[in-house]
Every structure is written in structure tokens, then in C-alpha cells.
Image 1 (cartoon, helix red, strand yellow):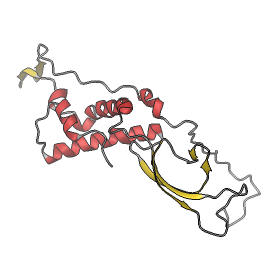
Image 2 (image 1 turned 135 degrees about the horizontal axis):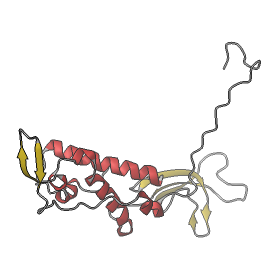
Image 3 (image 1 turned 120 degrees about the vertical axis):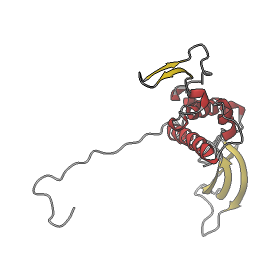
Length: 195
């Protein structure tokens, strides 16, 4: 998965020195991937532009009538081949290849998505032992088994992850998941050996 946030950016926010050891880099990558997957599932769309190819596309008065948006660029439009590349209205149809979607890595308007991924990744359980999330120990007693934490020099406060609802502006509308209830066969209507 392509990351929309650089690993070094998360490391800097967590107070980790660079270059990062391989295991720390993998932990940060996993944290960012988990945050991105959660956001993709919530939005119902990828965070980076995707290339699509659609056949049977009509040219509208204001451009192509395409199934995905926002359209970033039309790469090619080829007249459909076959017995009837013309619709019932007499208009030809095309196979259009284009890129569409949001670009959460570089688009300034998608800064709230990057903020959400960044803050959520910083609070991932794999990164619980980084300096910015550790409390500093002032004193420890072995026999009494007590620990006193230094309250005078608190670690830097990490930005808490914002509510996932703050990203709803980019969420696909009208997307519903429905599963019909399972209805058992009434007695007497079951065919032996069948379902």
C-alpha cells in the first residue's frame, strides 16, 4: 500500500532519531497502513487516484459521462469496436481510460485526511514505547516495588486522533451494506439431498 504520510514525518513527531532502525520503520509503516485502511473503509474510496477503463461511454454536452469522480485526467478515448458501436440514439460509444479520485498525499484540500492518518498512526499500539509516549521515571524502588513519575517535565503532548466523522466530507454518499436475513426452509418443503 502506498503511504500518504512519510515514515520520517511520524518518527519526527514521536521524537525518534533518524535514520530509523528497520524494526522501528516497519512498526511505523504498519501504523500508517492501519490508519489508512481504516480511513479507506470509512470513506468507501481509495486515498490516491486510480486509473479506470469504461466501455460504452457516451460523450455528453459537457464532456464524458463517467462512473467515477472527480476526474483528474482522461488518458484515452477509443471508439468502441463491434457490430453496433452506436446507441439507440445514434450516438457512438467509446472506451475511455482515465484517472479519478482524491489525492490525499498532495492536494491541499485533503489536509484533514492527512491529519487524521498522522494522529491515528502516532497513537498506534505498536508505537507505545516511543519517547513521546513514555512517562519519565523520577525514582524507582525495587523492594517496595514503587515507581514515581516525573511530573515537572512531561513528554510532549501528541495530538489526539480527531473523530472519524471529521473526514465525512470525502465519504461516498449513498453507500449502504445490506445482508438479507437468513430464512430457514419451512418443514416439509426441504428436498432431501438438496439445500
